[in-house]
Length: 285
Image 1 (cartoon, rainbow, N blue to C red):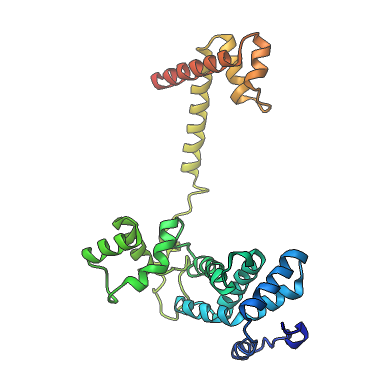
Image 2: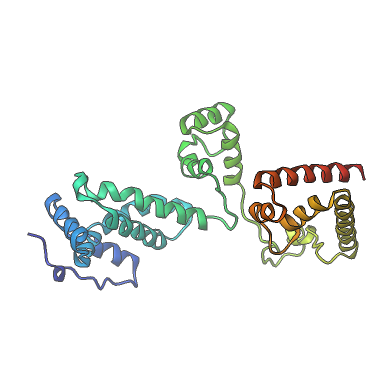
């Protein structure tokens, strides 16, 4: 018999993380039959009480998984919170007909949410952007055999085990070893310690008169070259390019085909020939 929802105390204390962990550990685990019945109630009737019981009975597993990620310097409470979001997503998508226990299904959703949180908050600068880099980030530490840099053989072995290129392993190792640097330097009582802060040597050229003048001259030159190259075209070709690329309300191939009583494919051919002629004209200027 499934315990009534009233048997659970949902007003968990939040003043202490230790108290929270103790409280979630008191919720009794569900049997496979109870889990299946609750999941079917949720699927058929959208029963939120059933969803709550599924979630509450698995909160202890979220805590256990979150503790595996405490080595990244992030608060355990935040990791648990993100894991709970993953658990709720898993409960929403759980299908009891697959004959798989919820904890086995939910572990992937819980870890996915925690992974995203770690990647977004571990450093100010995003450390992993590609799929291969994200894969490396969570496996590289466990693959290291010592605290120093990888040897060439270790790089090759790790790349082979994780299915990535050795260059990707080297790049991620360098990123893991690097630290964030404050743009203006860190507060310090000692004089001269901020002289190597990025603000001291990275110039802001947005309002540099020389650079602005150069940019304006370059823009004017490019516009002049564009006008000259357009003058090399016949009137129809010039009008097609103007309406297709230089007009605020760009015309379609079919619009121009109707205007000149030709096919849309012929308009496309004229457009391509005109652009090739303009490119040749610009390179000769």
